[in-house]
Length: 62
Image 1: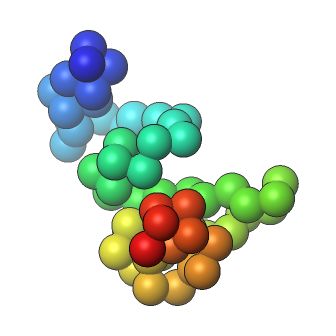
Image 2 (image 1 turned 90 degrees about the horizontal axis):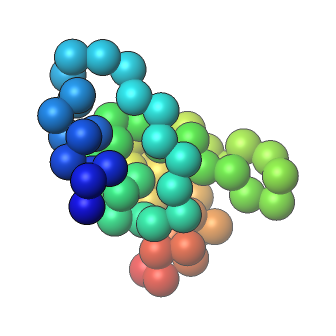
């Protein structure tokens, strides 16, 4: 996808804020801010969030 290519090209050079519902896109981010039921459900690296948040794990189907 063009958007994913652009994000990859900018990575490490500038701050990129991406809003997505696709877990595979979120997994490539340095940090994930997960919103659940209108509140912040977690904010950290993808792997740490998988370990810390049952709601985030459920979103992934894990």
